[in-house]
Length: 150
Image (cartoon, rainbow, N blue to C red; front, side, top):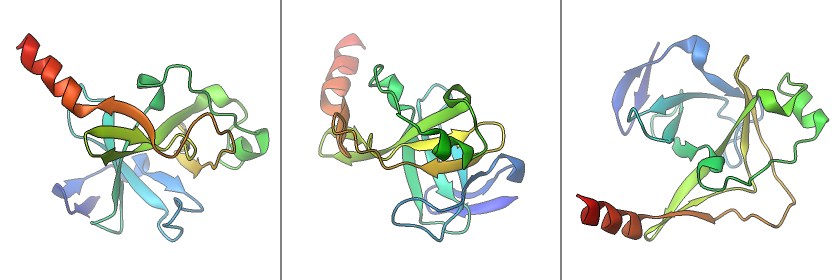
């Protein structure tokens, strides 16, 4: 199927690989179907593009790339809502934002995806160790490091 995107124009995606959020994502409860788009081969960042709204997309990543100790305390009831019985069968993503030169991740609102069925749910954690703007990467420092090594 072809989906329209505001960033990349029309894209062909396999409709069998769409991710479905039965209750939507916070702030967008009416939007259920998304495509996960990888824009660079070795990048850990993806676009989670709404299928029916070209302008609605989120940058997401696996939070453990930046916060290795991050563990989502998922309740069995929440897992069963997306067809899982084991947390290890889930893929976790965090929505990424840019605040000045810092990339932050919403570690209090992880996206949990059943990799087999592609059913997904956004959780809202009460664990205060992490925030909705948890620092992941300083872009300015990373750019300076790349410039020095080039």
